[in-house]
Length: 182
Ligand SMILES: C[S@@+](CC[C@H](N)C(=O)[O-])C[C@H]1O[C@@H](n2cnc3c(N)ncnc32)[C@H](O)[C@@H]1O
Image 1 (cartoon, helix red, strand yellow):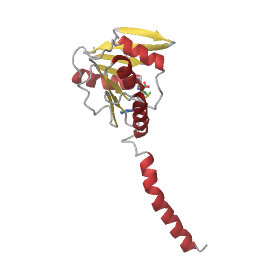
Image 2 (cartoon, protein in one colour; image 1 turned 45 degrees about the horizontal axis):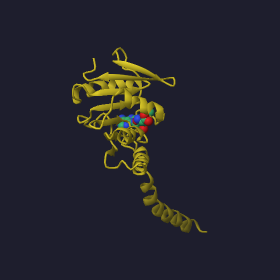
Image 3 (tube, protein in one colour; image 1 turned 90 degrees about the vertical axis):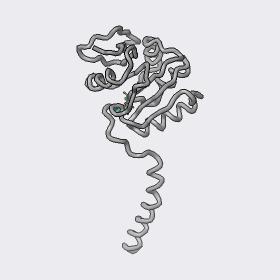
Image 4 (cartoon, rainbow, N blue to C red; image 1 turned 30 degrees about the vertical axis):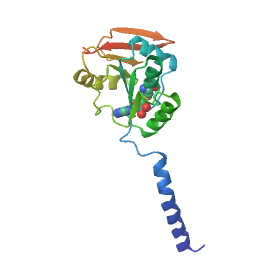
């Protein structure tokens, strides 16, 4: 094949492939602050129990991964759920899991940055981030959430800020605070 024909063929192939590639996963808003590691289901169950979730609650998971926390809150307690994740691939997985769960009327997923999304309607917030991110998000929790909103974190505390309650679940610690967190 002549060089010119070869270059032209490659250009045509690239042009044909571009829309297909764009459809598989749009680029993230920015790099995630922490990678996706799912909370084991028994720990999810314990977090929601520790927060005393009920059907009147709106459960926000900040960095929602595959969506298991809001979906479980809806399925087990009839709560409304919102999951926020910066990575579109996670939102895609969570949306597929939501469809399979049959809880689509109670849960939604937002492809947004947890630090810029308004979370004021939440009555329960769940976190599985990092110690530094817990401290970074704490002023936002106090500024936007109503007094009495429960905040549950898997694995990570908030430095010197004492939790109201802690629990060990199969070797993992979960922490509970109530807004205002101080
Ligand atoms: C450790 S995983 C926890 C997933 C889920 N909450 C769970 O407990 O199973 C952290 C998630 O946070 C997301 N994430 C990281 N930085 C974020 C940000 N700034 N805004 C929203 N999501 C973010 C990641 O994409 C990842 O899915």
